[in-house]
Image 1 (cartoon, rainbow, N blue to C red):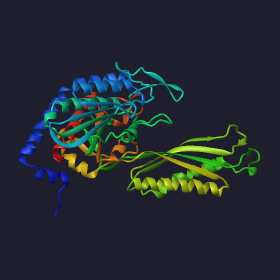
Image 2: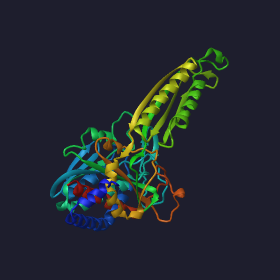
Image 3: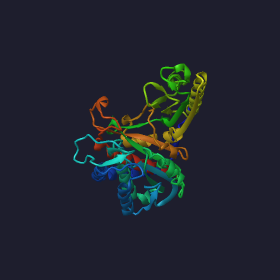
Image 4: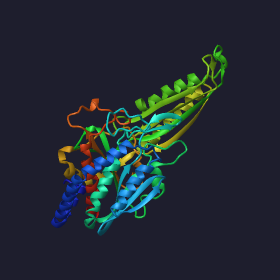
Length: 434
């Protein structure tokens, strides 16, 4: 006998009156989202022209806070440095759902010929550089501002509370600074009132407008930084036998690390990455230095695999160094956990996604090894993170500028779907949980 999914069971047990009520509310949300499109595009263009780096989003936060206050929401500012939180209390009692957008830009000099292209310049880590919304966070802020406007107009019919989280520093903070979702959680953004579920969307430059992409379980990879310091013995380059050469040892460690993914991770189940990105050694061509330091990134889609990779990095580096008569100091810094979509929540909300975008426009995507700090919220409460199409119809994804590049572009006609998706997810979740 076949068992029903939680979403199907919910539909069968719901009363006809409740289903009709939810459908009517969703239709109003769709209409209001379409009406809000000009505002959403205007907000996005303004934010794109005036980007701000992580933990510096003061102008952006001011615009967001002013908008939320104009809607009559309870507003908190200065959360996790520059974050803004808005609370919308519905007209009926019920659970609490959170919607999140990230606000920060990147140290990238824009190469697009747009009337609202960024001309902002700054100094980042001692280097002069441009500032650009090269990952679409300007669209995320605009879409969530739009969702707040839509939901505020139907609040008397909402059975519960919606918390709007505008988060700084998703791309990371400067060395030595705390920030992002981790700090938001630390400062209790998921409490007072306590959040039952959280939803977020990300614009996707290689997916056509009108489409939604999702994945149950591990959707985006964890991201960890590692450093390995190989300590040997320096010598004259002409007399290598007097040394314990850390350069050769480091080269052997780098090659050894490549066997983790190729020979130890079961790749048919889970993708993983171990990349060495930097290596620093010596100051002169004919001097064998006493030590070498390298750094890199570890990506995994399964927390158990992540732990196995950590152990392998330590074991390989330590043992290869010992075999050469050197020592290796290994440091692994956890950065972002796996972005893990709660399977039960995905099943529950999938009918909503299909109703919002059309069943043919909603599809499951493969996992990606990029990372997202939305995962810190998902560690605390069930969460669902989605991708919204931002590529013009008929465009070849292979020729579309990627995220985090100077030519990154978004088709703004896809923003209304993002507004509608966020608002409808919130309304349907509250109605279903009630």
